[in-house]
Image (cartoon, rainbow, N blue to C red; front, side, top):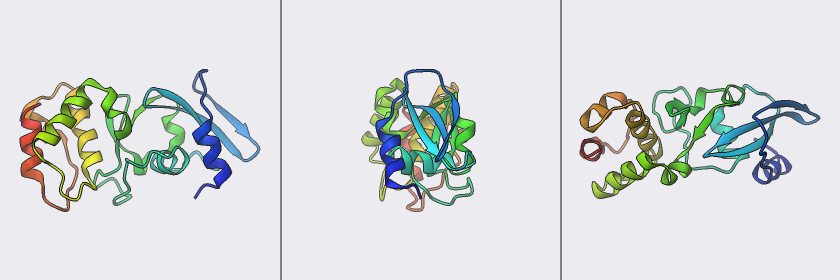
Length: 173
């Protein structure tokens, strides 16, 4: 877990320069492009999962921890418009790439469409998996899938079993 000073630094430091990696006294400074904004964080180890950098260092808690082994998909984010399980992606490998989390979805045209479909179909029950589900659906849309073909690209799990409502929502996309 990151220290409070590390959290403050990550939340309050924005970089407008190029994405870079530099060695700092307390660790390694990394600049990530998250939801269209360059953000600089300091990590003790660049093999830290991207999920923890997003949640603990940047305060973007919409991306959820589920299984930690890339099975459930609750941690899905888009990296260069491709769905990635952030629980098993090293933060160091995210440098220089565009990362979109659920918090950035409202600013994306495909994201807006998917969110509207989710609301219209009343998809969530408990909602825990839904950020990952939405990110996977939007990733499929960005890969050119539409309607029910989106489902074949989604491997996310839902403990509440809202798959029928998910299928209904994506069939409208």
